[in-house]
Amino acid sequence: MSMKKMMASVLAIALLAGCSSSTPADGSSDAEGQSAEAFESTLYPTPEGVTYTASSTNAAAPDWAKYDELVSQIRTTLDMDERVSLLHQAEDILMGTAAVIPLYYYNDIFMQKTDVDGIYSNVFGNKFFMFATSPRDVLKVNLASEPDKIDPALNSSVDGACLDVNLFSGLYTYDKDGNLAPDLLDHENPYEISEDGTEYTFHLQEGLKWSDGDPLTMNDFAYAWNRAIDPATAADYEYMYAPIAGYEDGALQIEVVDDYTMTVKLSAPTAYFLDLMAFPAFFPVKQSEVEGAEGFAENPGAWATEAGFVSNGAYTLESWKHEESMVFKKNPNYYRADEVTIEEIDFMLSADDTAIFAAFNAGNLDFADSVPTNEIASVKDSPEFHVIDNLGTYYACFNVNSPVFEGKTVDQAIAMRKAFSLLIDRQYICDTVGQTGQIAATSYIPAGMADGNGGVFKTAGAWNYPNGSDGYYDAEVSETAVEEARKLLEFAGYTFDDSGKLSADTPINITYLTNDSSGHVAAAESMQQDFSEVGINMEIKTEDWNVFLDDRKNGNYDFAREGWLADFNDPINMIEMFASYSGNNDPQFGK
Image (cartoon, rainbow, N blue to C red; front, side, top):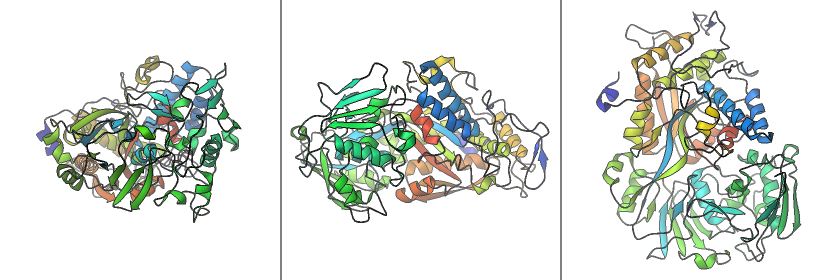
C-alpha cells in the first residue's frame, strides 16, 4: 500500500473492475500480438445481462445504439414501473463501461458574512441573490471565474446557471425552501393539464416587461424554445426538449393562443415537465436582442457576450470586465422589483481559491462559493462557513476514443478503465479533500434522487445491483482489489515486473485534465499517487475554465475531472446526458 494510505489510516473505496461478458472465452490479443486470458472481477462484476460490442468507427469504444434506444424508451413509456427498470438498465450499461468513474456524492460549501441574509440555494446548485438583505447597498460575491456562457440556451455550467437565475425569469422557479413555484405564470391559475397528462395550457401574468420596458409575452417563450432546438443554435441542452411532441421533427408542438396563453403538447406524460420550466434553458430571450447582435450569423450567443443586453429577471448586467468582474444592477421592470433591496451585486471573477479566501477575510466579499482545501479545517466551526446538500455526483471521466486505448478491443479498453477505477482511494478524497462529510459514490445516479414514480431510485424495484446492495462495486479498499487491477491490465496486454509495477515494455502514460482549483487538483494528486501503485504514470494538466470546458466537450483529453449537479430531481437527467447526440456527452459515446 502507498505511504499516503498508511498515513491516512482510513478505509477507502476500490472501484472494482470487471470485463464485459462478451469477451471471447479464449482471450484476446493486444496490439503487440500478446494474448491474455479473459478475467472477470468478482469485486466489480459486469452488470447482469450487459454485453458490449465495438463501435463501427473505433474497435476500442462501445457501440452506443442500445443506450440511445433505452433513453428513447424511457421518455415515451407510459408504464412508470417499466420506466424505473429502463433507467436502471441504462445506468447498468453506463457503469459497465467504466468510462464514468464516480468519486463521491456532492454537497456544497460556501462562506457568507453573518450580517447578510436571504441568499438561498437549492440541491441543484442554483443560488438566488435577488432577495438578499445586507446593511450595505452593494453585495460582493464570488461564484467562479469568467463564465463560459450566459445565454440561457447555451450555458451548461453551474456558475452560469447561477448568473442566469438572477438575470432572467422563467415560467417556474424555486422558492427559499427549495420547492417548485410559479414565477412568471399567473400564481392563482398557472396551468391546466389534460386528463391524459399530455397537454399543458400555461397562463402568463399580464403586464410583464423586459428590462428595456417592452412587453414580455408568450411569443417570447415560443421563440426561445424553438431557438433552443434549432441546430444552428447548437445548444448543449437541446435534448431536454425531447418530452415535447414534435421535437424529433424539429418543430415543437407549442401554440401561442394569445399573449398570455400557450399550449404545449407532450409525446407522453412527463412527471418532471414543470421542473424543466424552472431550468435556464427554458427561459425566454428577446428575439430582436438575439438576432440584432453583431456577429449573430456566426455566433448565436453573441448577444450575451458583453454587458448591456436585455433580460427579464431581478438584475441586468451593467458592466463586464472580462476575467475580472461583473456588475449586476437592479432591474426596475422586474415584476417583483419592490422585493429586491440590494441595488447592486459586484461579482469577482476568479478561480484562485487563495485570493478569494483572502478577499473574503479582508471584507471585500460577502459571499464566496469556494474555500481552499487547506483552509477547510480551520473554518468548519465558523458561523460564516456553510455546508448544504446537493443532488449530484463528482466523478472522473475517460474519453472512450482516447489514443490511450488504441489497439485494444472494446473489452480490453473496459478492463483498463476498470483497473484505474479499482485503484482509486475514494474515502481518502472524501476525508482529506472534501472534508465536509461527502459520501463515497457507489453509482453514478446519486443517493436520494427520486425515481419519478413516488420512490427513491436507488431502492426502487429492489434492483439487483452488482455489489449486492446499492451500487456497482464495494466501498472498501483491499489488496485484493489492487491484484484484480493488475489482472485486468494483464488481460489488456500489459505486463508487470517483480515489484508489481508495469514493465518498461508496456507502460501507461496518461494525462488528467482539470480546471485550476485547489480541490480538483488535490483530488487529481490523490489519484495520481493511487495509480502509481501499479506503475501508471499520470500527468495533471490544468486549464482555464472556458478552455477546459471546450476541450472536455470536444473530446480533447484522455481522462478528466467531471461533476454533475442534477438539473431536476429525476434520473433521466443523469442518464440522457450520455446519449450519443447530447451536448453533454463528454465521454464521446457513439462518436
